[in-house]
Amino acid sequence: MNELRSKVKELLGSREIDLFIGYEQGTRLPRPLIAASAEEADRLIFDERCTGNLAVYLTRKDLTGGKKVGIAASYYAMRSVGRLLDENQLQEGMVKVFGLTPDGGLKLFEAIADVKQHLQAAPAPPKQVEDEWMKEIAEMPAEERWKFWTSELSKCFKCYACRAACPMCYCTKCIVEVNRPQWLQPWAATLSNMEWQISRVMHMAGRCADCGACGAACPLGLPVHIIAHKMVEMVRQSFGEPTEKGNVLSTFNPNDEEHFIR
Ligand code: SF4
Ligand code: SF4
Image 1 (cartoon, rainbow, N blue to C red):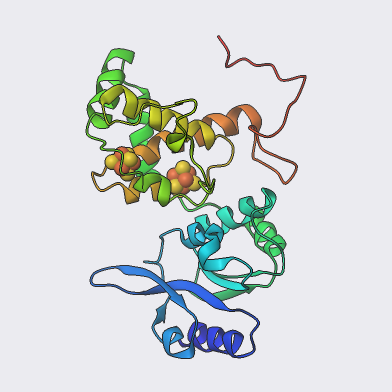
Image 2 (image 1 turned 90 degrees about the horizontal axis):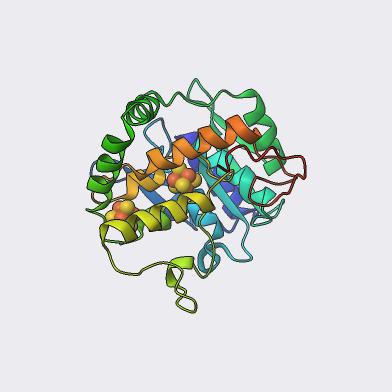
């Protein structure tokens, strides 16, 4: 903890960063803290409880626009940072990433390219709960699965917290706010809620960091991250991992077998 605080203070003092996106102790759990001074940096914490994906703040231009930023990054936040660089949403030299080593030590990455290299060798933390949930849903007969999702998504009231928490949802104008043409029905009802979640996850195809922040943000606890998790698995099986050359949504391969179109 002290190592993080002193390093952040040093970087702020030398103007190598203008602000640091990290965590402080909340009432019960760690919560985000944007530190721009030594006093604020003294409140920083970073341990295994800090799993929220802070990369979502990196593309908020009102917060980080034109600024050099440091960030405390969980494994999935690191993955998001790498993908945001591939999508030209971040610039090398503007972001310093602090990660945690498996033994709880601090690791500073001066370049996002180093983060990406690190991730190639670092195994993803297990997602046992999500995997079991996904398997259980996949094994349901189609009618039961339909009932499950219509029942869950009928509760959604379109607050869009799932979108706000997602580091890869950075469009300044979202499809749900466009009304010429009206792509999606704006009201909350079972089918329009389903339409919203399917559209959201389709836009994440090959881009999703699988961080689970969308599900964690839902005030109703709807398992929308499981839809994203399933999408990640399907895309990985059919197209492999995204690379800096592009993802399934942004590339075209004339030899694509298109076996998913039936
Ligand atoms: S898991 Fe959810 S919040 Fe995380 S990147 Fe994927 S869609 Fe976005
Ligand atoms: S956070 Fe939950 S309630 Fe809000 S739009 Fe997303 S799924 Fe619906």
